[in-house]
Length: 62
Figure 1 (cartoon, rainbow, N blue to C red):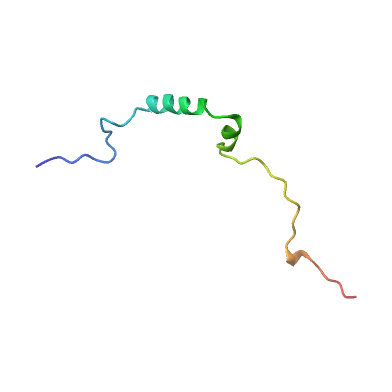
Figure 2 (figure 1 turned 180 degrees about the vertical axis):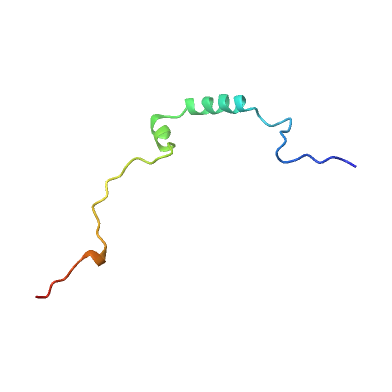
């Protein structure tokens, strides 16, 4: 009976963590400042006007 390979076992064609790190550095080195900024995890902060909930508005008819 043939042993099947588990999904967690690396195959011959799987890159090592060092190969992945090296290749990603090569790719990122060609990015412009704009692309690098757009690929950051957090987007640039954007100003938004203050908001209030409608339930916070009180109408006084006195």
